[in-house]
Image (cartoon, rainbow, N blue to C red; front, top):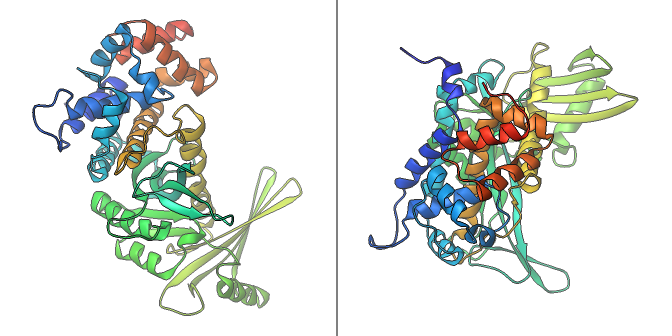
Length: 432
């Protein structure tokens, strides 16, 4: 008998999700000789365990008690724990592309369990929010892939950044990473990489992984240029991209001229203590010239005597019946920052901590594994009642992670289910 979506969602617990991730790690090729003591899946799983348990550093993870070693075996299937130095050496040579292939597999879980249905935008699309984030900087530590920033005093700093894509929805709290692309010096090049170059690579990767999905790409004003929009349209996708008067002067002059002549569409929607004012025009040139024509939406939010203004271009034709939803879709772009990057920085993942820099791929690999850990946490948060009841009782997610790691350190457990049962007892949360 075919399982319902509710049954499939109830099975998306840590025990199942970690087991599937372990299976995926087994498929990643090891560049070392076959007679190594520490197997690559164990090392990859150890890196995942660091971020799952929110260890603040590799050194803290390496200093294992006997209880922790037993729990790493029981919960993560790790037979042998290597030193932090060896972990860095091995992961430095892992191909980041191998890890990127694991994000679509988590997406498939969302699809099979019906979660993607909850994320449908305008009953048809999925919103893919894309943005860049900076996660490492040093005046001394560097590698051949570091981006270099020269300062006015003549000194330099070195940093790593990434471009990430996540599935978002205006009404949903959780965001689900779809993949990421490092913004770093490419092989054979001496010049810095940039977000726009990384976006070309990320778009190609997303198309390969999610071809056939009805996607709307949601981005900031940096990406409102013809080559980027052409690539989105060539992929068969739509877009909602923020634009600003300073970067699209011709478009805004055209809008103001038509507005003065009364040649634009308008709509006012009053909702509680907020008044939404919409102004739009369809099929206008993006830059006053060129081949790309867009639909332009200008929005004003009036609340508590204050006015906020936003503007977007989109491939979706604007109508009175959809401008409110498209506005909310455009503003959902911020969820990648608020629910994604800020969570990684401030909710126990220690995103900006240097877990390992290496000489080749280590910084990128550790960031990707952290993003995978975040993805699995988001799936559990979206589907697991017990996790959310404990979170509510604890009142802060950081406190949940702290208690989980405390139990893990001092008490043997045979599974994540047992660990969460112990946690439920601590907070007097009733079990099903």
